[in-house]
Structures are given as C-alpha cells and as structure tokens.
Image 1 (cartoon, rainbow, N blue to C red):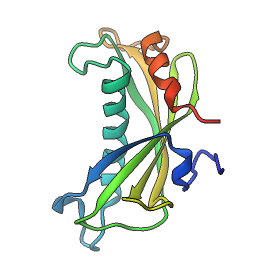
Image 2: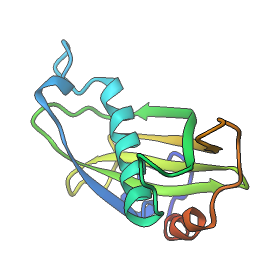
Image 3: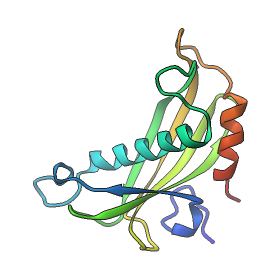
Image 4: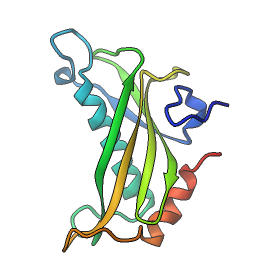
Length: 146
C-alpha cells in the first residue's frame, strides 16, 4: 500500500466525505477550477473536526488556523460530478496537524487531486498558538495510518 503524503490511492485514506460539484465550480475551460479543490479540502477537514473532535465553530476557544496547503492535480472533473474527499492525518505535533487530502470520482481507485492541509491550533481570544486539545487528538487518532 502506498502511504506517501501525496498518495493517489484510495486505500490510504480512512475517511471519506461526499462532495457534489456545483455549476459554478466549472471554469471557462470546462472543468472544476483549482480553487474549488481547496474548498473541498477545507470542508472535509472541518466536517471531521465537528463530527469527531468536538469543534463548535461559533464558540470553541481552541481553533485550527490553516497555515499551509497544497494541491497536486492528476486528472480533471467537470460539473456534474459526484466526488468524494479522502482524509487522513499525515503527521500530528504538539500545536499542529497535517492532513492528507484527496479528491476522487465516486468509486474511482485513483485520485483526481491530492494535497495537504495544515492547521496550527490557536486560542481564539488572543490568536496565540496553543497545544492541540486532547479531545481533538483523540478524534484524530482514527485518521492516522501507518
């Protein structure tokens, strides 16, 4: 099993979220524009944090700020397309976590796009970095692959 940070293989992602494309996702070239992929990544990561790590978007004191992200494009999609976003943890530190993310056509084994998405945890009231809360670490354990 390939476990490279930019793996294109579906088998390296333990969690998936459905992602429908929208008419406005297409660009003048007739395919989903690159900026939409970053939105797909952000949506999947935050959905996981809400569902499994106790994130309450409006009130949580500890929040993850995106400090780094990247996307490598391997193949294109166009509206209408039923997509899935694969999610895993590439590495977790004391104050930051790097997610591995990938976008797949439904039931495809190879990703259309792969990338990473890094959060640094901060105290919302002062904007200073803080250790990742234990509840978040506990929830992220299910996304760590070997």
